[in-house]
Image (cartoon, rainbow, N blue to C red; front, side, top):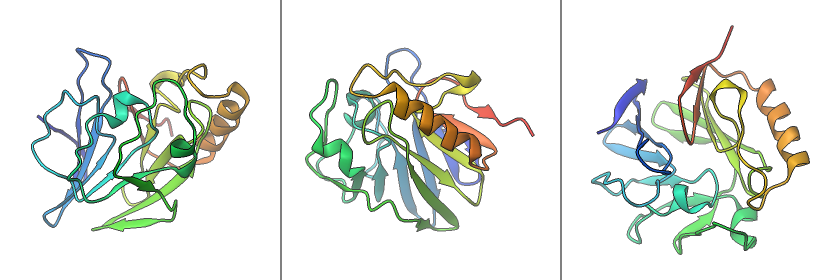
Length: 179
């Protein structure tokens, strides 16, 4: 089911449909997922924390009502754009560093794909979870689904300055950063 990609970090990719990749950080009996997929992937547990990189249905439809902590950038919930599906139990992400076991997660607001898109850097492992902001091979998410091309350019500029080792996007391949 989940495939290991780093220290305590795994991914569940469903390439056979539009659904993106679900990432799992698991440590000390606690589970944190990044994005929940389109709702068709069976993860088999309720995570302690679910962080959504943005509000498009293929990243949020897997959220269950009984999940105790679901975080989404406040700009996302305030906007009623196309293809958005905001879970009823989503709370505003305070965008402050989050310690999860031995992992230190830092949040970056990266609008462009949507108004509330974020990237998440695991400072300890060097993994950047980029949602649909940046893809392997230099690609990036569409801006015509509630986003903005100028904001996307600025967000990609910000990402280029982040010191990460592994890019883990919402769709497609993961990519090691060239040294």
